[in-house]
Image (cartoon, rainbow, N blue to C red):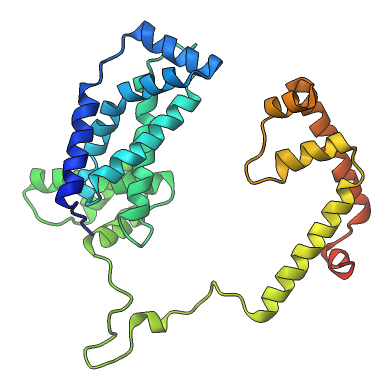
Length: 296
């Protein structure tokens, strides 16, 4: 599944890459200063300079994955996500260059993107499968060049399995997946048939009407019990629980502390006390799932 960028996109990617490569390389002390300003002072200008200086690293790592047939621009974009994750987690107090730390995050983000998009069939989910996916073709090419052959035999598969610390069965499975391409679900089952492959697939994800009703009833019951449990809390405890656990993007302890006029540690203590109250309430009043449904 190969993707070819249109000329305009290729031109934009090339311009971005040239800009990234012109960014100045940071001295160790200045790099640490930028990281400290971002971490401790939330200095966004320092973050921007730090990130801009290492987009060249993103481009370098992304280039190593260009043979998987995915857009170079998308690979770079995913690498930038990894770079931002590295900046958010980097601890400048440690004696470690940011580039060394960021390389792992960049590579991981790009690898995840490749695995999600290289095929409509998930190729690997475990750490061992990811290692196999990204190293199989390299090892196969090495073996074929060394032994002057085309294709692998059982001994070669065992060699790959041993080198990557995976099962021979995993190597065989990966070999089959990488040797075949994706097929369209709209393809006909046979040349003289009007039926498509997608018509033969069972819809296991769609709930039947009975399951939909049960799900709605369960949801209503859970909401009722939660509201009753929250009534056992003080107004301040309710606010903490709602903003920390019942919103899509939970508020931090620090921001809640500022809003309530208390320290971050005090918010933590109030949160733990409130959670304890909720746990006690549910243990006393909710015996089993049938009780919850029958009371709704």
